[in-house]
Image 1 (spheres, rainbow, N blue to C red):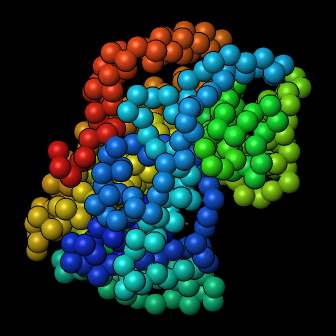
Image 2 (image 1 turned 90 degrees about the vertical axis):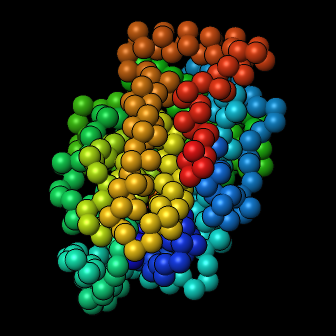
Image 3 (image 1 turned 180 degrees about the horizontal axis):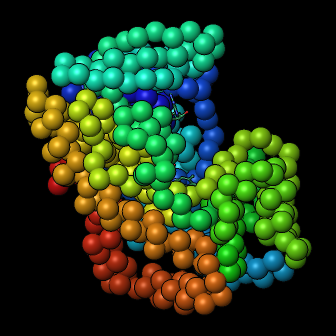
Length: 396
Ligand SMILES: Cc1cc2nc3c(=O)[nH]c(=O)nc-3n(C[C@H](O)[C@H](O)[C@H](O)COP(=O)(O)OP(=O)(O)OC[C@H]3O[C@@H](n4cnc5c(N)ncnc54)[C@H](O)[C@@H]3O)c2cc1C
């Protein structure tokens, strides 16, 4: 049983099906979700997605040529560096693109049960008994499985039921994000043009695509994560990004937030666990290792981790413990590196202080110099950090 119909859950279902298993997916929501926000899909994810039949349903929305500006509230702009400028960088897609591509690759005989959640998980030597609840009519039933996969995201119920309460594993980075997709390009930006406004403690990003309007991201620091959820999100954004006038671009984005209800507003937290499996229960994706958006590797590692899990189950048939242990050993160094970058890259996304803002500006200038030289770009593309992002995990 796989809990969660997100990127990691669907990819795991495909990988397990390929390995000869009969996966069943349960999803808390009453139907599939769409839309989402910008996602950079790095080489590790693309290699795995190719093997799982997902990549053929995806296309790169990267604008060519790519144009990104560092902007201020007065509308001044100078050339900046965006995701599209990273040498050997990622495909630029939406989370909804990846979920749809994965769902379209899901074999037809994989059952999906919506409006269904696990209420209890009990395991013994031969299997796992799960109490399933249908949230539409509140009925419950017991079912027996060989393996339970928790792919139910950062606030995983499977993790709580099988590993313990969230306080043990979730580490707040004291940042909040609001992310959403636009139906029209923002004023002052042509199709394919991105923008970044980075101020001490708060930032605003416009992620451009070649063939659809942008997605936007507000990212800011907070001293009190719990208090953040007590007000409507647009009101909170106006407070945090005020009292100065927002400027034309941010004002237009906040108005979209005020008029719609499709957005993600959440605190940024990492899941840190010493191990990702306990007996016949295993966690995958954000449930296991949420690296945060600042690492830019959550979707990539969710797909690559799922693909590798299938490969290990196939390599050690009949020996679940060995397969899961080998899977963790192989995956751990990559995830550790992504988690570290999730913390260090915060500076690039949202400088905390004036000193960090200055450091960020200098770093961006250096990156522009590097990008203007083919030789230096090649060196960056071959760096250890980029290798970890682009390596084919199952083949490495
Ligand atoms: C703004 C932003 C930008 C990002 N940028 C990038 C990027 O550039 N590159 C990248 O690789 N990643 C990026 N990420 C991270 C990436 O989006 C996530 O890591 C990835 O989508 C996680 O997928 P998942 O399937 O593990 O979890 P989720 O997407 O959280 O899916 C979990 C699923 O489980 C379901 N569920 C939850 N609880 C239950 C339950 N009790 N019972 C049944 N079902 C349940 C949920 O409804 C959901 O469908 C970004 C994230 C954000 C927020």
